[in-house]
Image: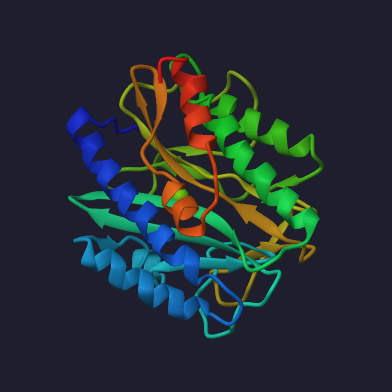
Length: 274
Ligand code: MG
Ligand code: MG
């Protein structure tokens, strides 16, 4: 059952989402060759607690850390460790925060130093597919419309779309109805309703869509060991349109990256008045 949120609850969810956004922004300048994922995890936990929130993933389904850190061929759910990151790596950082009884949950795949052009293209396409999908999260559409849009955009570019892991509704629990696959058929699945909040999160592979799991019981990686990218936003359906609760702007500010992707998205969704 989809649990809708009233405007006050959506504002609380925005607060939780923005704690995650700020956490990712805080981490961004530290993501360099030599740093370990465990060091970043400790920094994030402290930052989240300093902002009056609890780490959303720590202890969730018994996950041992505050961040899911998934480098290179790892898709999601990687466990932080003490292995230094290297030039040319990529790392998906997925972060959760719980405040006022509501979760924020979003993710960004960072470059460590200079990455190969084909990997950079994978990151750009995966991030673009996130916005392509979010634009379909609107009144009158269904779960399949978002999945179809993400799948079409990324498969047209030759990438593999992970099937086994999906986005989800978000609220007082981390995973609510509906599941939000990154593949699907137009017009199929549950209908979107005003006040629902979802985490949309394409997980896109450079090679095969197939995955495998490490014996740690957590880490998901690509079956062919080629890189995988993952970007996630939290989005509310307000006045029939998708409203971003999370932002990547803290990351861009920290890294000195000029990006108008979220302004462009808003202009497309709301028209020229913004
Ligand atoms: Mg996430
Ligand atoms: Mg999620």
